[in-house]
Amino acid sequence: MISIAQQKLSLNTIETLLKEINPEVSSILNKILDGKNNLTQGDALKLFQTTGLDLQALLLTANFIRKQTKDDIVTFVINRNINFTNICIAHCKFCAFSVNPSDSEAFFLPDAEIVKRAKEAVKLGATEVCIQGGLAPNLDIFSYSKIITLLKKELPDLHIHGFSPMEVFYGAEKAGISIREGLQILKEAGLNSMPGTAAEILIDEIRQKICPYKINVKTWIKIVKFAHKLGIPTSSTIMYGHIDSIEHRVTHLQILKDIQKETHGFTEFVPLPFMYWNTKIFKEGNAAPGSTGIDDLKMYAIARLFFNKLINNIQVSWVKLGPKFAQIALDAGCNDFGGTLMDENISKAAGASYGEYLPAHEIIRIIKNAGRIPAQRDTVYNILKIFS
Ligand code: SF4
View 1: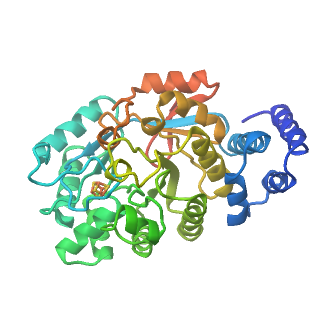
View 2 (view 1 turned 180 degrees about the vertical axis):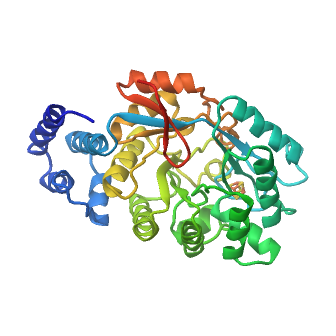
View 3 (view 1 turned 120 degrees about the vertical axis):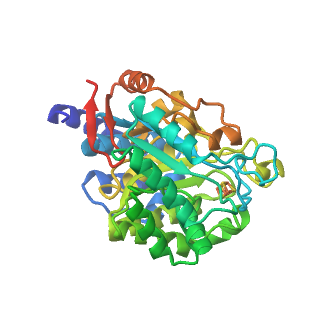
């Protein structure tokens, strides 16, 4: 734990700064420093509008709260992404990964290849595989449970993190069963946790424009709550920097906060800046070219303060930000560096130039160089090894 002297030092620095800044921003940040946990949507909106010294105060406060909550540990997980197919009927306008079945780049990994990749990952120290794919016409919930069963038969201890709420909905509908039944089938097959993806921005009006085929907000919430109540934890995400406004971002954060208050099933919050280069919506001139670095830092810092004590793990995405900026973002209230990934196809397809794999030793070097303590974790944040 950090020493009381260290805490006082940084608190004094922040308190001095708070006297110099916009009184409204100062009063919001003081609420958090006084131990209150009641930031409103209006407070979050005000924080999204900060610049200059106000922004510096926001970042310092978020980092202080992070230190109080998670000490100086920065966790990471050794994992592999297995995107088993890029065939998808949804055609989300921000997605450059999906293709039609007849496309020359279409792939569908055979079961044996999925198992082979998982075994390779375990040999490299992975404790988790993240399994997601496009919505291919021949898939249903039983296709997903078959993948889980195969993996669990060969690698019973490997944590299977897989199948977004959209995939669960699609798989259940194709199988002609309810969402609850679909989730139960996946859990019984051995699903350990789910990515809280397909959230994008939880505003129906925006979803209609960027991913009209996807489930609406109400259904996304319903699936996530069902999963949590069945004992399947999920991550939580936001994809921002396209046609969304800061008001939309705040509404999205409030929805996640309300779910967490009820279920406590989110393991982490992972902001995902929009990767725009190769996407249809950007090429047609209908979306912003992603977030800026300042937008990203604000998202992390506000998430730390807005979710204070409710979602304690705020993850930087090195794939989206690049490892160098991800390192900087650690000081905006973040305590997790994500996973090694090994194969990451979705951001790469959208034009992200960062690698598909960041080895654990490089993540450790980055975290140590930031003056923090690297620790390997499992998917649900049990610490496995500290690299002091
Ligand atoms: S984001 Fe997912 S659902 Fe949408 S087109 Fe891409 S693969 Fe399909």
